[in-house]
Length: 396
Length: 150
Image (tube, rainbow over all chains, first blue to last red; front, top):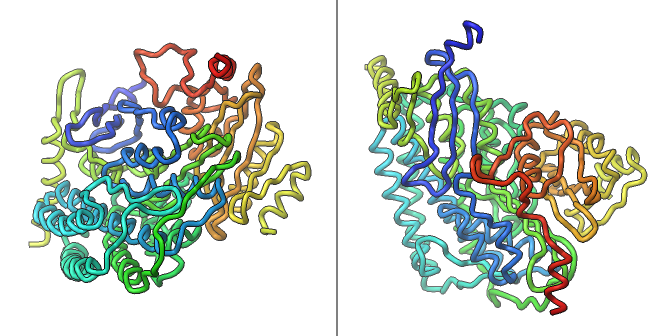
């Protein structure tokens, strides 16, 4: 072993966390305070959805894939039913398309607010955390009103949707949107104008445009690196081509840009929901699918974290022959290998969390030095808070 | 016809094209040409790799690389075929980092060998408790038809 390698230490993050549903293990290789490399280990909680799905009928598949993720539990069923509909060559009725967009955008708002809250917690801004999660609560109440569930809404089925939006619910949804928009505006201004947050997040964990293309990252992670992609616009489905809205793209590629993209996207989501509620067409909310002919179909949609991709191969029976599922984090987490390189340990937790990998691993991080525990999860959180505190001192 | 498809057919004239609908194109090519075709789509046409799918069919393994052209919203799926007694395909992860994880996954779940992969270690299965020749996504067609006959 050369002298240089002897200085290297390993900081393991993971593999288990009491709050997260998808444990993963990040092994940070550090020299002093600087991260030089990252190894990622997956599969601690692999649930074999691709194995189970061919055992289920097309009506049951959305219920299975809904349980892949608890936060974006509308995007997987939506992509799956789009794949089934692509394979069968049918189109859902217009009202179903509008309701799909409304549910999908409500989900994006709650997911982005959740991430903003967690990001605030990591850098020691617990007020941001409390605020963001409080306003997210209103969105969950809307879900309960429309679908009966705060989570796992069971909104999609092949050929349409399961839940209709009643006329008397529309003013209630609009009232909630007004509140959420106003509060998010306040939160956005507070976050984006805060010099300490800027100093803490700007220039941290940069993913350049070339790297983003090379690692094929998706969603806000790509859009914050200047890659202008959004499946909602590029491959129109549901009602996204019926209402006006914008794709938010920023060139910087750092954690601050990722936070800004998500905050600004909330306003676009509000715009889409308002447009859909205003033009909600009359008519049925589903059509019957008698058979799915042999063949193949691809469905994709823009989840809060990026493109969800489902591929279905049919042999003409009532069950898929093969069902391939790709969640956005699968592409985004892999890109962490380049994003954390050259940063400090105090920033690594933030950079790993910046792609919004469905869960946050900082609380259970543990650092070992020569077999002895060096940092606990709380220690690493403290390191991150101390760095924020130091920056805060500079601004006094 | 889309611009990329026209150029692709000029470059690879023996491609079998199946147009499911205008935004879903399936291009079947020989497995020897996979790297050239994937490089053409990513490097010359600027496409992003969405994901790859491995399927165990009755006749052999099909491997599908789904490339997404985000300027037009078209998905170009390159389809290659590997027989059961020789399940080997050139690894795209050697030049394209986005393909590394999915090729590791197909290697361990289906038993397809990716030649030249920089890190062919298992991605999802257990490090300690897994037999190396156990491939969960392989389908036993013969046993399946026997069961139907009974």
